[in-house]
Every structure is written in structure tokens, then in C-alpha cells.
Length: 170
Image (cartoon, rainbow, N blue to C red; front, side, top):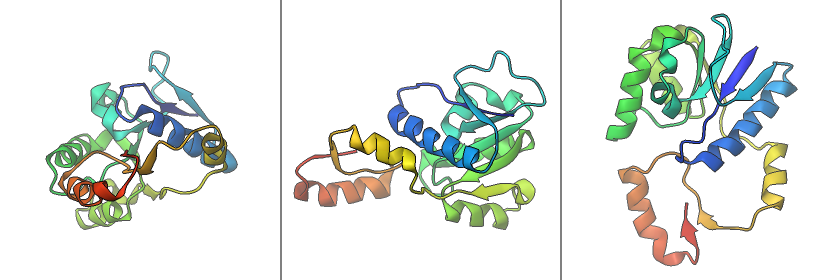
């Protein structure tokens, strides 16, 4: 059994929550049992926990043995926040059984640094029927949406295009 740990931390929660629905849909389409949870009280040692990278250290999930880490940042950039993610992932890699990453550049870096002994899975941001349901029930709020944390590169781009947009940037 895989448990998908997702807690509302206030940091892009709606985005991660909706993305988690798409990930669960993907796993179920491939006949893999997965359940979303918001606490780890009843987790057994042989259970697998899928979690987003920002919640890995925050909730001390590195104490668990069977982590499937969903890496949602460009961790090999020069941005300080992403460097912190990379350092934590490298520090606790013995407890990370698999790493799921949306960013192929991260996968290439894992290979170059000989991390995770080929235990990574590339799942790019993909279309899911789940998104169609979400988009039909939502009013458009943003013209442009950045996935992941704000960094210098995104800030430069945001400043360049902001005057051309009539709605907010997300």
C-alpha cells in the first residue's frame, strides 16, 4: 500500500491538492493502491509514504524507512531555497526508496551525482482528466501560473511580463 501524505501547510496547498488528485488517478490507472492521508499515526514500517518534498522535513518524514519523495522543485538551481531542498534530499537519501520528479533536468543531475541508484521516476506535469473537472468549476484567476517556489529567474520573468497582463500572476 502507498499512502500519499498531504497536509495543508498554506504553501500552494490548492495546487498540490489538485496535483495529488492527478497523481492518485495516474497510480490507480496503473493498478497501484494509493490513499491520501493527512497524518502518519497508523503508518507501519513496511508501508510506503509518498510525500511532496516541502513536507518531507517539515513533518520529519525522514524518520520513516519507505519514503517515495515527490520532488516538486528545480533543486539543482542556484536558488538558496532549492539548494536547501537538494541538501535535505541528499542528507536523507537512505530513507528515500524512490524519488518521483517532474523535472527531467533534476533526473539528469541525479545520474551525474550518482544519487538514488537509479531509483527515480520521471512523471512530468501531464494532463489528467481530473483537471478538466477542476477547471470547469473554477473562474479564471491568473493569466500566468508559475509552478513551484519563487526564485530569481521567475521574478525577472514576472517583472518583464506583468505590465502586459490584466490579471494576477500566480
